[in-house]
Image (cartoon, rainbow, N blue to C red; front, side, top):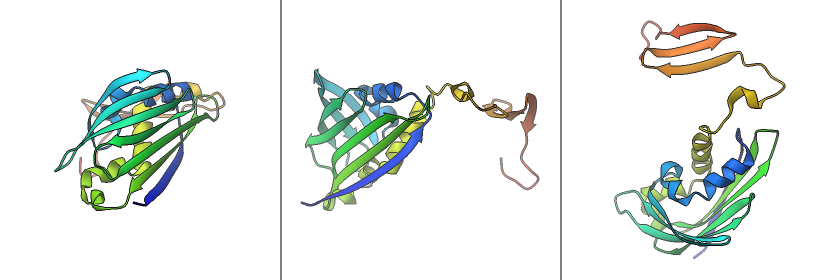
Amino acid sequence: MPLLPATARGVIACAPELIYKALIDYDAWQEWVPSLISAKLLTREDILAIVEVGLDGKDPGILIMECIETPRKGILARVIEGKASLHEMEWRVEAADPGFARVSVTVKRRIGLHLLNPASWQVVNPAKCLAALGSWMSVWNQGPEAVTDGENIFELWETEAGLVCWIRGRKYRLTPAEGGSA
């Protein structure tokens, strides 16, 4: 069957080394990769890992993937057992400005009836996978301190009391506008 490749690229505010560590933390994939309900490292030897992942959906499936690691640069994950539209996913990570990384993800998917399973749509969408990685890595973002030539003038926090923002050191509580929804 022919394969359809799709690629997404972006910059993530996090050190490339931390992104690489997140990519090879296979047991945590279920926390951030769209449509995965389980992920488990089965075995690892040097730069090769075998990972079992479970797909969400009406007809959940188990996939076995081989993951070939390029230390500090990325991984290539290929499905070696199981039925899904996903065939291969390749992540590449490189340094950008200090504290930032340029990341690309290329997904190759099979054309066929596997595309009828809505659970596979998100995991084969490279833009959604890249956005999910960016959200996951935001935990590790050092914030404005990572930018050495700028000034932090705005922060937004969600608290139990509602939204609070700080603009140039002054605190403001945000309330919905009249007629607006909360």
